[in-house]
Image (tube, rainbow, N blue to C red; front, side):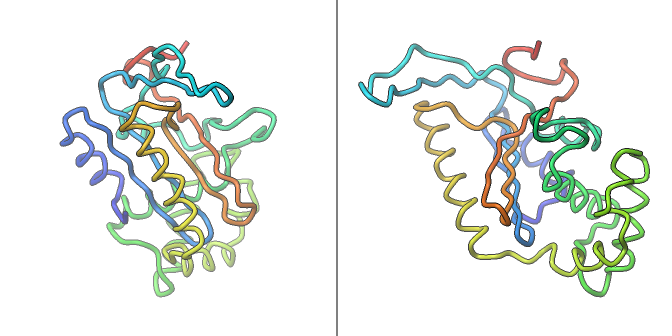
Length: 210
């Protein structure tokens, strides 16, 4: 999309409670932030054998896109058995790209690589557990990332686009449980994961997370 956090949140708010999906591919990875709107999203699940539809169900908690950006970067958002010490690296990378744009109104590039390293290391230094990660400690790694971060790899775009297309169909038809909140795609292992970025409870719509 190449929309920054502020622009995306403003655009989502103009949708007046309707669904809004923000999707970006960056190098070999991709991410999608899903705002299911202010009205509780209802859906039915189809039984695989009988093809019968279940009773009407409601998404447990829906989060405005702007609220997702307010969640601290080091807050654990994945599965405890997988992401024991920090959020998934793909999510950290996406948030760092958005933060760099938020601070500079520019996207990283080869001629801005040194500045990118400076901004990101200073940003991540706020979070002790993340600042110790090798990925953020090595300037050369961050410089290489600055060069490739805005590259859009066709296979990554195709896979994430296919996943998102399926989610749009589910959202429109109400058939099948939709992905909620955030999707991340790791192009190196080919896995696409659904994360829940938990905001303050008062900023959710639908049911409040317990």
